[in-house]
Amino acid sequence: MSKKRKKKKKNKSKMPFITKLTFFVAALISAFAVYNSQGEVYPFEVHYIDVDQADSALIIADGKTMLIDGGEIGYGQRVVDYLEEVGVEKLDVMIATHPHSDHIGGLPYVLEHVEVAEAYISPFVHTSQTYEELLDGLMEKNVATNVPETGSTFSLGGAQCTFVSGGAGFDDCNDASLVLRITYGTTSWLFTGDAEVPAEQAMLASGLELDSTVLKVGHHGSETSSSVEFLNAVTPEIAVISCGKDNSYGHPHDIILDRLRNVTTYRTDRLGSVVLITDGAVVSYLDEGERRTVSNPFDGIGLYIGNYNGDKFHKVGCEYMPAFQNMDFYFTRDSVLAAGYDPCGACRP
Image: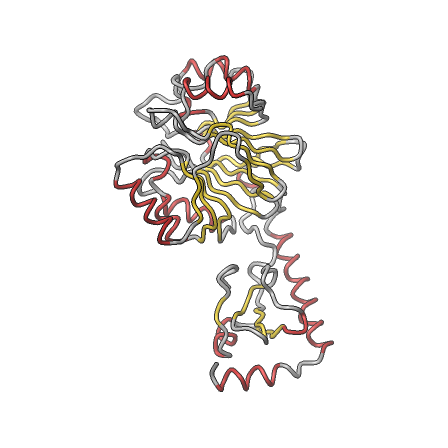
């Protein structure tokens, strides 16, 4: 610890309690002013990110974050930019549904630019360079990586997540897709990757719950997926199709659109990124004018908090902020750096 820092912290430690309290209350007022000006924060959001003829979805549940797939090679920047636009600075969970490049191509870039705590990958082993880069990235970043089994579960905030297919036992990469069902309140959400009819039949035979409020339509709306039997089990009220405008595959196929004719359907090729939100009871679509740009209501205010008893400084609202009596207040980033503090790795002030 430098002499300059010791002197700075010694002087700051004499700040009267009432002064500290005044600064902190002012920070709270500023935070909620920012919050009100940038849109409401919803308890559960799903962002079906427009990555052209590919898949990527961001789930935010009570502030916890999960990314399912990352688009094609070259689309990692678009995904990272989108995360930044909605204020996501770290991912609690990353899921690579299967090794095809239109699902994992952007994930190595995401790993380079966004902190990821945990990942789930399909058991299907691919020989592509993109797949190897994904595995190398997970290892280099020390991401806890799991190959889930069918029926395994985890929590994301108040959401419960179940792998209704763990992808094992298939020779086809698409059928080896991880399929995830999420419940939040009375709503449910199914993410199918590129699972085709054989995988759908296995899910139907598993006895696991498939009924879902919202369905991410399998394989970009291809006729190889979304069998009548599967759709009858899922009974979605809302369907989302991730596909590229005028794509060469003809996705979504007319036969699938016909099967979904009584289902409210949103398409990324027509709408761009699709955002759905819920309070746990009602699912709503957000048009662009309603979408927020900052997820943390404390972002953007000019106050940084150092820890007298540590080496780090934080944004207001960071989960690792020190106890009130140990807070060291600064109004510019330059001043807190000059005092000798290092930025927190979680909130990245």
